[in-house]
Length: 401
Ligand code: HEM
Image 1 (cartoon, rainbow, N blue to C red):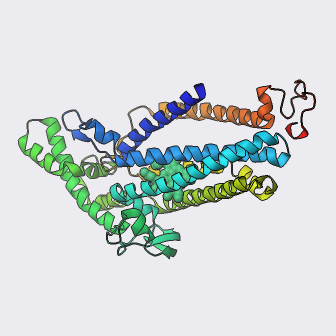
Image 2 (image 1 turned 180 degrees about the vertical axis):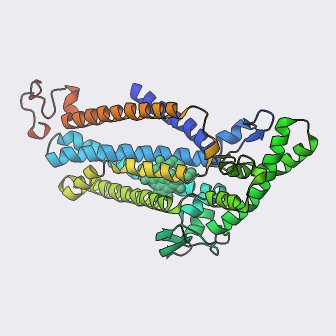
Image 3 (image 1 turned 90 degrees about the vertical axis):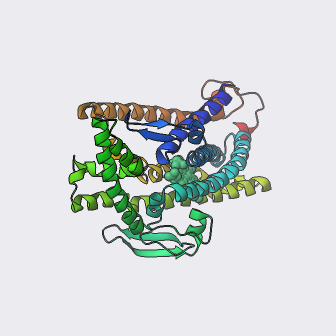
C-alpha cells in the first residue's frame, strides 16, 4: 500500500509542479495588475488545463516510467549475465520489457505533442531548437544535423528531411513557421511598443488615477515584458538608444547550438529506448532473451541513459525559454530577488552539498541492494544468502543460488 501511495503521490506532485512550470512557459489564466504590480490569477481552470502544462505532465511522467523500466531491465540483465537469481530476473525482465515498450512509445508520442504545443505557444523556442534562422515555406523541412553559426545567423552545414518539421510543429501542410530572423524583427516592434508600456506603467505608479497613462498602458500592456528587457541596459527605458534596442532584440532569442543538440540527443535516446524494448519484448515472447548476451549488456549499460535524456529535456524546456522567467512577461534578469549575493551563494552551496550527499548515499544503497538482489528479502531462497548468514534450503535448485 505504501508503494502504491508513493507512486500516486509522486504523480500528483509532478502534476502540480508541471502546471506551475507550464504556466511560466505559457502564462494563461492570469493578468498583470498595475495596482499590485504582480500577475494575478483570472481563471484557475485555464491554468490547470493549459495545453503546455498537460503535455509536459504526460511527457515527464512517461519519461519517469521509461527510467524505471530501463532500471529494472538493466538490473535483471545483470543477474542474467551473472547467471544468478534466474527465475526472479526472468520475470522482472519480462515485466520491464512490456511496461518499458508501452512507456517508450508514450514518451515519443507525447514528446511529439509537447513539440506541437511549443510550436503553437513558443515559436522562438521552436525555431531555436530547429536552428531555423530563415522562415521556411510550408511545410518546413526538419534539420537532422547542423552546425549552427550564431555569429553569422546561419547553419554552416545542414542535413534536412523535407516536410517533417511542418508536420510536427503545425500538424498541417500549409501553415508556415517563422524563422529566428523574422521573430527578431517582430520583437523589435514589440520592444518599441513595450517602451511606451513601461513609461505608462511608471506614470501609473506615481498616480494610479492618471487616465491617459491607463489608456496607454491598457493598449500596450501585452508588450510590457519586451520593454522591460531594456532594463538590462538602462534604468530609464525612455532614454534607450538604438544600440540598446538592438542588444535587447538580440537577447530575445536563446543560443541555438545547446538547444539544437540537447533536443536531438534526447530524441535519439528516445528511439534507442524504443529499440531496446522492442528487442526485449520480442525475445521475451520468444522466450530466448537469456541467450542474447548483447541485449542484456545493452540493457545494463543503458541504465544511466534515461536520466541523461531527462536532464537534456529540461535544458530544452528551460534554456529554450530564455530570456524569460515568465514567457513574454517577466525577463529573467529582472526576476532576481533582492537577497544578497552572499546569501544566494550560501544557499546554493547548501543545496549542492545536501544533494551531493543524497546522491552518494543513493548510489551506495542502489548498488548495494542491486548486488545483494532479492536475497535482501531474507526468504532463504536466493543467491548469496548462505554467505550473509542465511541458511540455504535443502535441495534448493542451483539456478536460485
Ligand atoms: C522522440 C522522443 C522525444 C521527443 C519528440 C521529445 C520532445 C520534447 C520537447 C519538445 C520538450 C520541450 C517541452 C517544452 O519546452 O515545453 C521535451 C522536454 C522534456 N523531455 Fe522530451 N522528448 C523525447 C524523448 C524524451 C525522453 C526519452 C525523455 C526521458 C526519458 C524525455 C524527457 C523530457 C523531460 C524530462 C523534459 C522536460 C519537461 C518538459 O518540458 O516536458 N524526453 N521533450
